[in-house]
Image (tube, rainbow, N blue to C red; front, side):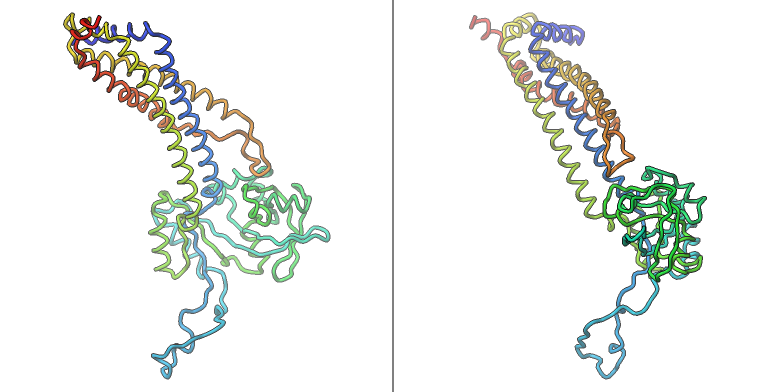
Length: 419
């Protein structure tokens, strides 16, 4: 078996029917190209949506959950022991929302090799006041630089920056929805009324927008000390601790460990975003299902063309076998034709998909909900291109194998006698 001769014959057959060969290659080209475009754009969009939530979500969120005691006073009476006791209107016991011994706890957790970083958080309910207008809101007191490092805070600022908040003790990064309702701009002062009725004046150093209206319409960021001052608390007052890990897979066991050891509520990222993760999985399944269907359809087109090509080349097959070519040689000739079509169409498909993806990536995409996003999102993962060319070769091989098997078993005597 001489591969050089077999490939030459394959090339001759393809060039003799250049129109049919071109149509088959174009089928692969558009199949692979559409696969690249669709999967790059849809996964890019999914990553954008995931980023809006996951980038700002800690891997482990710790807080002190205020809830009713599991054992009520009546449970301690021996006289009613063993009886069925029904209690109505159970109220949580009087307890502070802060995490007790938060600073020593943070120091302990920072020593854990799984931990990339920890940020304290102080939540303060307040009212934004401008003139006669008051809006209910939530102030998040944060360690600004750590928040920017671990949770990409600056990616969601469309005016101002995190360092401006760090430099300004009475500064505030205001939610875009709140600022729009109060008609405020950077440099303006806004009055904050605490839950105790105290009045504070803060200076706007920037605007924050997450893309989620329910957050942007009430939430703002201030320095940790500012939030503690608004609540009238000391430096050890911390309501929440957010943890970022090196490996997100460690979130579940670490949250369970913290709850057992410190008797605090620890929510891992999987629990916090269970419904969101389900939506992402469904979108990915739909994307890959449609993409693979396109490739399979292209494979059927190649099968039909190669099948017709064999019928048209019956005389050539008879001559090849009569001159000494075996049935296996004939099979390899038609399989190599299919692979050549797959390779040429696949490479063109990669170029076509890449070109359209570049156009999408440079297409302006401006929306008030996502001011930091300027163009449509595209995922440039090279794995998709590898999958595309491999699938092109596999699908064309399978599409050409059955016709090639038929050509292998053709009897040249029957063909010549029929002439």
